[in-house]
Image: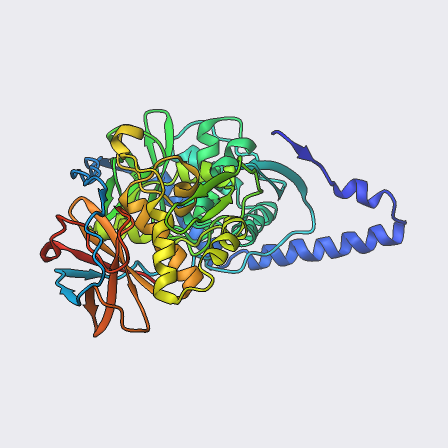
Length: 480
């Protein structure tokens, strides 16, 4: 093991008198006896069943082909040249309305995790953030092979009170650092890789912590390699998957198309969600400040972005929920902007909109986003790559969906208005619900008017649709 900071009971007790030692030993013995008597619990029973299941015959599954990223021609930005003095009311049709995916409570263990008074500390780093957990007996996995018997023995060896400490601390880190399901899974992988001596042992430790946290996973073997598959209702683009009991299970790396799988269901296990209620609270690693300026409204602003957060976004898979590609953009638009970015950028934007009514302020913010340099994903990244708002503010180029997502954040945060995203084949725009009557192109949803605001129609005011957009084929994405 690496980076151990031992705080052993022997060191603590050496400074205590004999009476205190006896008192501590009595308390510890009582704790151990209590743990033993209560270990035959629902969680313990499910782990014992899993251990027996591992010894039985595993089933063979073949990988399903990866779902390709939607391939469509990107529509280039257009310069607004018409310069109309006034706009007429123009209702626009849409063919479908998609709500944002629900943000559900994260999975939890089937029973509360009890802590043990004996422990050692282990320090590790995750996306530049120093973290610390307690470890002890059973944390070092001993795995001879990936046979069912050896896996069962290793799993049983992890069922210790000390590993309950480890699990307790991992869940506490998830809450304290606001880790979404995906960030939590990556953290468990990083921790297990640091703790264990071999890849197979690291996979088994991660699978143990992940399953005991309440998440759905399956152990799988290909030759002498052990793998963990995680379940999700989100369809990940570009990654082969395994269909098990009508559930999609994904590998954590490229693996064999044929696997032997232990298809055991833990009680109340839940699938991984790619929605983020909050962005992970990683330690700040500031990149150089980026400066912005516009001509139309003479906006000057600057901000910096957390490099650790950007590195995490690089590892975030592009996915959709329930076969609906519209959910892709909702996931990015519903992830709140990092507070550090808000603190740096928003004061300048608030100053820029001072003295304007709400529609005028929305026009100022639209001009700010329209001023960002445009770039095509396939030329810059070699593939379609949606941006979180911080990425749009950091990278030198962005495309239509990145602009629409950023604009939706600015309007909701700074003006407190409802925003929807409007998807045309190859293009994404936004529309805003104003409290006052504002003329222009609008979409009606439940008798509420949303005025089109297109961050890719360069120089265009609010209320104007970019040329070539046929609303007969447009789809609306509702945002929270």
